[in-house]
Image (cartoon, rainbow, N blue to C red; front, side, top):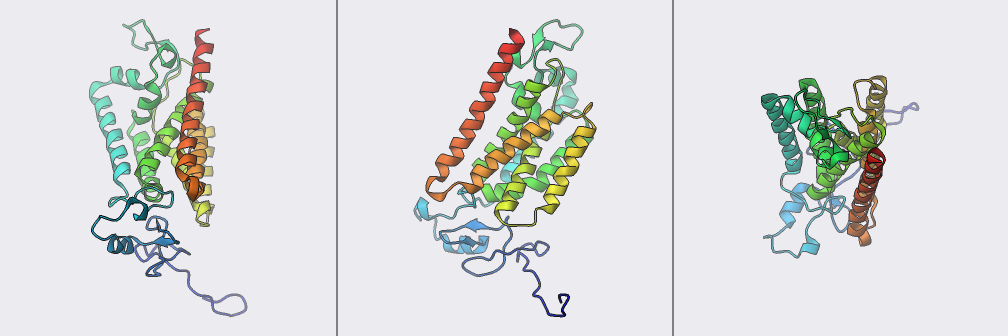
Amino acid sequence: MEDQQGQSRPEPARCYRHPDRETGISCARCERPICPECMIAASVGFQCPECVRSGAGTGHAPAASRPRTLAGGTVAADPRLVTKVLLAVNLVVFAAALALGDPLVHRLTMIGHAFDPHPEVFEVVGVADGEWYRMLTSAFLHQEVWHLGLNMLALWWLGPQLEAALGRLRYLALYLLSALGGSTLVYLAESPDRMSLGASGAVFGLFGATAVLMRRMNYDMRPILALLAINLIFTFAMRGSVSWQAHVGGLVVGVVVAYAMVHAPRSRRSLVQYGTCAVVLLGVVAVCVARTAALLG
């Protein structure tokens, strides 16, 4: 490669496990280039999965010396396990909704305060009526194949990289809190009798978290920002059929939680990470309590 003056430039390094990914990070032990999915935080720098496995010994090493992810999580043999489980849960709930029909959908969907939509039932339902579980169950519920397909495609594309960088527990916390963040804004800003469902809030949280992670690793953020911008334009252009509240709520929570995960100082990592998750959860509860009081008052 040559620049405008005719001088040669070195080709960008590519991950030795994923040759299609450019990277500026190398393993601290073998010096092979590695991408974010393959990076495992070590006491100094990052190591590749092979060096971690070869240096892990017989498994009797003290916990403090075990390899950790970028965010301090435990390195797992399968960095896609939680993503696979989340995909499976969404698919199972979708199949159940197809088999059982509207009764299950109306029981699990996000709705603030309204009469049961079944014509033969005249009871008040919703989060304000004590059905708090709807804020989470609605995030695993889909009715249309295209809706499920788009969300699951995004989950499979974004999830594994985040799971590898954060670790299983932190990644799961990010996903669930983003889902709750989306439901919370729906509860606060949407008409209380309008139903909302889908994993879009959680998926937008993953979009935000991916942007935070790429910024932390000094990667080119233009692809993820462009994709996020396109999704936001689509969200607001289709406001009548798409819940912008779920998308924006999930995005904001995902950015906040991910920032705490990847920027927490090593000496206070757990305190900052779990403290941020607790504050976000308390914020969700506070908003929901206030909204419930307003609806019932």
